Amino acid sequence: MLVFQFTNEERNKHGKSSLVNDSRLASFARDHSYDMGKRNFFDHETPEE
Image 1: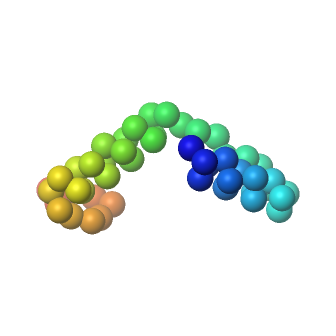
Image 2: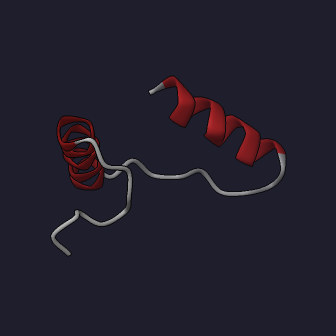
């Protein structure tokens, strides 16, 4: 979560609004990262798509 915090601090220094954490999106991204590692692929889409 520190990356999120540091990103918002930098955004605020430059007059940008803070990003808002979306737990559903984070969960989806975590699941996709796990799948990529488990099946040895690196892409935004799964191999079946």
